[in-house]
Length: 244
Ligand SMILES: NC(=O)c1ccc[n+]([C@@H]2O[C@H](COP(=O)([O-])OP(=O)(O)OC[C@H]3O[C@@H](n4cnc5c(N)ncnc54)[C@H](OP(=O)(O)O)[C@@H]3O)[C@@H](O)[C@H]2O)c1
Image 1 (cartoon, rainbow, N blue to C red):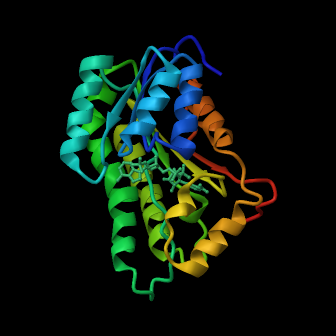
Image 2 (cartoon, protein in one colour):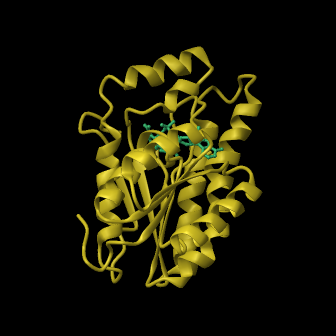
């Protein structure tokens, strides 16, 4: 999917230790990009960097800890010459009724999914500005458009990401393209961390028909490979069996 003008850029991917982030790292590396893999589980990102070989680096970072993101940005600058593409993918989905006693999980979703993406963007912004044209790819969700019971806090983070991205587009383009990807049900580890029993069962049932993460990675790779004169602003991607 790579085009000559885009190959060889540097992509920073948060949440690259599993699921959509790991698949995106593989897809972008296959297209000739150099990739910086950010996540907390250092063993996972080091193994993936080894698999991808030259041009891939693993950088342990927690998007809720600004100091660790600043340190990660310094390494990306030093070892890869700065970021051209930032994929804000790190996220948690700890669904539970808002009326349940799971306040910490609700706040953690906001801190990780929304504030983590905002922090990472703010820290990497200067790097994205310096190249031939930067790309910001924000991983939202169909839950940024549709909000079933149990999704109040998660949907707030994804609705927030959509609104934040709309305003950012006005501020940052044409220098930095702003793209929002809204996946439907994808077969990843996302639901493993849910603690509310009924919410977890509902999320696990979905895995029977969810699509693999490389389907989303391919869409991201396509979006960033387009010529800089156009931007795929918002892409909603659902399994064909998922109507809403
Ligand atoms: N799966 C779906 O159906 C679906 C649908 C729509 C949108 N999404 C979104 O897609 C994104 C990726 O999720 P996934 O489905 O691929 O799930 P996943 O396999 O659980 O991946 C989540 C990633 O986020 C990272 N992460 C979590 N907290 C972090 C933190 N504080 N700092 C840095 N990294 C952190 C995890 O790495 P560490 O634990 O190693 O830090 C992991 O790599 C999320 O934003 C999710 O909301 C998923």
